[in-house]
Structure formats: C-alpha cells, structure tokens
Image (tube, rainbow over all chains, first blue to last red; front, top):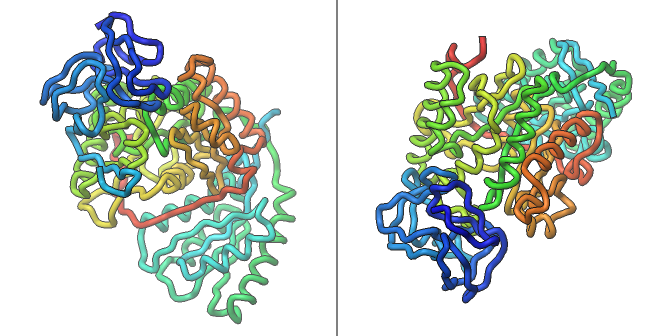
Length: 103
Length: 396
C-alpha cells in the first residue's frame, strides 16, 4: 500500500490500514487514498482516522505498524474509522457525546 | 543561563527552593491553603486527604517533603487523623530541612493556626535565601514525562518529539522517567525488547499485564471521553501514542512511585497498585501522575497534551507541550511548546525535540514555565498499595 495519499493525511507506517487526518476536512471533499479517489461521506476533524483499504469484521486495524483493535462492522476505503466500526481487544472505550449520552 | 542548583544536605540538588505546607488530612486543608496565600510565589500546598493510614501515602509524603526542590516544610495536622506526622516530621528533620508541625486542635483554632503558620513560612523564606548554590548539569536532573488530554495528534507530534528530547537527556546522563503502564497496553512486545537485561524485559512485560488485568477488573481503560472526541478509538491506539514519549534509548530500569532512579538512564514507572483492586482507579487525574514523578525525584515534568490541559504542579515545574496546532491557538497562554508545527509541516520531530531539550535546561536554570508563571500549583494524592520492586528492576 505505498500508493499516493492526499497531503491532508499522514500514513505512519507502510503496512497501516488507516491514515491520520492532519486538518479538519469537510463532508463531500474528494481525497486520494492509496491511489484511489474517494469522496468523504462525513466531515472529519484533526487526529481522526480514515481507512486506507476495505476491511471486514474481525480484521485487525493497523496504525503505527501495529494493531490498535478489531473491526466490528465492514469498512470501505476512505471511511471514517472510529468507535462505530472498531473496538479495543483489551478494555472497552468510554465516550460521552455533546448531548451527554454515552457513545 | 547556567544551572546553579540548591544544594541539600543529602547531596541532591534542587532547581527550585520552595517552602511546602503539607496538610495531613482534608480537615487541615483550608488552614494550609490560607497559610501559603500571602506567600504564593515561594510556598505551596501539598497534602493527603484521607483519615485512614496508608503506607504508600506515608512514603509519598516523605519523599515529597524531602524533594530536592523543597527547602523547608510546615506540616499541618488537625490533631486526630491517623497519618503518622511524628514519623514524617522526623524524616524531614533528618534530611537537614527546617520543619515544624502545627496541630490545629492545640492552637486556639483556625485563625490562630493560620497566623502561626504564616509566621513559620515568612521566616523559612527568609532563611532559604541563604541556601548554598552549586554548579549543576543535566546529569544531576531527574525528568518525568506524562501525557494528558491526549488526542489523535499527541502520538504523532508532541509525544515522539518528547521522545527525541528524552534521547538527548539520557545521552547527557539525566534520569528520565516515563509512566502509566495502563497506557502501555498493547506495547508489551516492542517495549520489553528495549530492556537492558532479559530479566528486566520480563518485569516490564509483567507490569503491563498487571495493568491490563487491573483495568479490566474496573471495567474501563485509562481512557477519557475527550480522547475519543480527539480521534482515538481504543486504549491500544492511545498506548502507542503514549509510548512514543519514551524515545528510543534502552530501558535501564522499572521503578514504582517513590523509588528514586539510582543513576542516569531511562526508567519506566509502574503506577498500577499490586494485589487485588482495592482503592479504585490507579491515577484519577493527570496530577496524580505528576505527583508520583516528583516522589521519584523529578525536578520537572514534560506534559504533552492534545485536547489542552492547563495544569501545573506544586514543587516541580511542568513544561506543557501542545500536540495539536488548533488547540495551541486556543490555549497559547498555557503552552510552552507548540509541537502542532509538526502536524502542519512547519517543524520536524527533531526540531521540536531540541526545543524541548533546550527548554528543560533553561527551566533548570530558573526560567519559569507558563504554568508556574500563572500560579498553577495543583496537587493530588490518594490511596494505593504496592509491593517493593524486584531485584531485576534496577541497573546493577
């Protein structure tokens, strides 16, 4: 997976299946990921992750060249990778939404 | 600026010369705070809130009251708490420091206790002006690092840049400590491969396995809601970012809070209690980690933050490294270093690493950090229990 990736993304290790967003990017923006052109379905903010390849449930998610958890729902290339589609292999993640609900 | 340390009678050298006012139960906290109030530039409050005795807290208070940055100590007791104030006072006296204990129940009350304590502090500040100064260099320093309010930028800017600074500090002979084994979950293999000896590798791995079990029993990892808002999805992702603070030096040892590194090198601090889960979460907020660094002798702490923490600390200065360029803009009043320039492509990891390294030397020479200048002097200490470290943990 050494194909060209948009400057707004950082790939931390060649084998990684996610790239890190280095600035806020609006929904509908077109991005180049792993040589492929994708359109962002939703806005993402600094520090979040986008998929560099399609992943299926149970796959390990690779960042920094190591696993950071497992896929819980199929992920398409360019999709936002976060709590809704991956989980820890150790302890569950706790997150509050702005509305005060537990995500 | 050249480094001129404050020489203590145990031979250790401080970079600050503080008077510490220590409450020994929450009931004495108000009196302690009021005592320091007119002297906030020189006197700081630390303390332990609990009424039940705890060996860990006793050791931590002994280490903190004899920290090289501390020149004199006033203990403030209500009078009926279980904390062993007699032992603490003796330890401080044996260290050659001026010390006194104020027992509120014997003084006539709050007002009298405050007046008496303020008298002690004013005299101590005057006396400390004569503390001998001696040449000091980087090899005399103990430097801690923590991260707090981490986000998806911390692990690719501020944390690895701190790792580069740590590499330079270790090369210069300083003792550098990284910590929070609960935030190294998933890093067991790569971290233990850096151990100075195979026996230490086993200890390092064991400390993370202990943390994983401990947090699993509690039901939550060392992961706050803001971490997720900032793009981190799992504890192992957060761990990889936190681990980057350790740099690339070999790991010389594994210590627990209050153990003082015997010489320069890189040390991991195991902060997760031993035995069954007894007192709840290991470190309930970032300052608990900073306090443990200080108990192990840290002259200052490098604090990397992505979401944006504003804390400082009593006793030892805190250098704040902003990992996130957007947050730096919002909180520039509180940030000492802008590692967000790595994210925007305006600086390299080495550039920021060297900036941190240079600032460490300047702060050791007396330059105030942002949080010091703003008067931040947070402190927190709660209950824990530890077994002593094993023989394989320290360099021979």
